Amino acid sequence: MTFDFTPSQATFRDALSRVEAMLRHKDGRLPGAVLKAYVERFFTMKEVFLDLAEVHQEPLYVLDHANLKKHAAMFKNAFGACFSDFACYYAMKSNNHPEVSRTLIDQGFGLDVSSGVEVERALALGAEDVIFSGPGKTDKELFLAVENSGRVKVLMDSLGEMDRLNRLAMQAGKRVRVGLRITPPSSPWKKFGVALANLGAAWKKAQECPGLEIQGLQFHTSWNLDPSQQVRTIAAIGREIGQWSPEMLGALKFLDIGGGYWPQAGEWQVHAVTQAGQVMKLAGLDVDRPLEHYYAPAQSLDVFAQSLYQAVETHIFSTVPCRICMEPGRWLCNGAMHLLLNVVDKKDGGLVITDAGTNAIGWERYEMDYAPVLNLSRPALDEKACEIMGSLCTPHDLWGLSYWGQDIQPGDVLLIPDQGAYTYSLKQDFIKAPPRVISMP
Image (tube, rainbow, N blue to C red; front, side, top):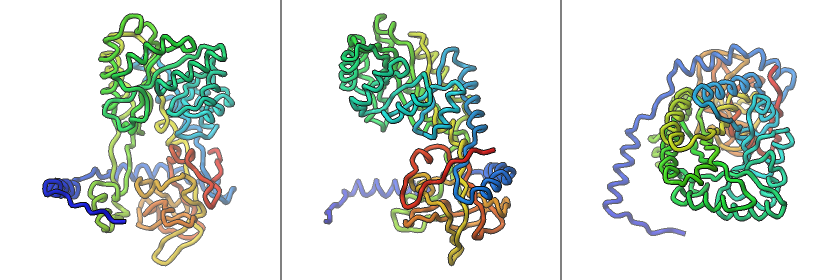
């Protein structure tokens, strides 16, 4: 099938102008000193990883409990220095290994879940403080929350969900604690929550539901390299609740400002996803630049905490005092797992094949994101171009376009550090079994 589309002269000129701007745009380069320091830190731990590789003789996810506990303490300390009444809920979806959630429960975190399956997992782990968010909750999932209403709070995603949850709660003779999720202004995530313009009416309706105890509001913005999206949303919520009656405000006990906090290292990317790279790829040009790495910097956690406190103090606390809740995921667990692979073959042109495939992470991440591949068997602070491929029957099975080391040969052990977020949870039984999880000594 073909389509006859001829753009207008104005559209054509506008498109050409935008393409030219993208080609000329200078994306931020990842500083070499930062990258070398990062690689060197993991090379100093190579004996620990090499010992695990020698014992197990298979690809592994290495679970780093110490890193997880360290980041849990850092998160709570940063926000605890600003907020006197706050609670943290770990976003289970970011890494659903039970040991990750169990460790964070032990560190005083609640759990943020988004399905009936995750509710069941959270309860089985002994979590006493669970928030259940997300769109499209089924009656079966809602009834599970009703049955466990002493431990599970439901963040309602729509008025239809409110009606169904109220009916189920009344049938069970329960009163369920609930919050309302808000669709952030200017957000691409329009499938989530209630529009801010309809929030007041939705809140009043929830107050009239005998099976529900409405307690708070929640929103979530993602990919937060800085707090600007969250600050704008808090200001918008403040303008809305500033018009509420005392009766409405009296029920507001918490504001959940969600998660999406990006690790301070920033977002590391390959050339193909830069503005120039995207245009070149569409034009059929070669976009591989194995030794060119780009990044979008992220603000520190202290900046997030201080900026969010100032926004809440100005726009929320001036109207109503309430508890502030957060749902960190990636920030906590990104450094809590590392991937350990073994080179099994080397092809013409230097391309190498590993014993694990990218079904271990569930998506073609490394066609977009840059993650340093470290050759622990031949360490060197020298990066060399080389296609590192997995063992799946797909050409998209790519670990990276380079490695750090003196050389690379069959039998070498490779480490891809900091692969704990949105990797393990997305793994697939595609062709090969995903790697086992082993705890770091």
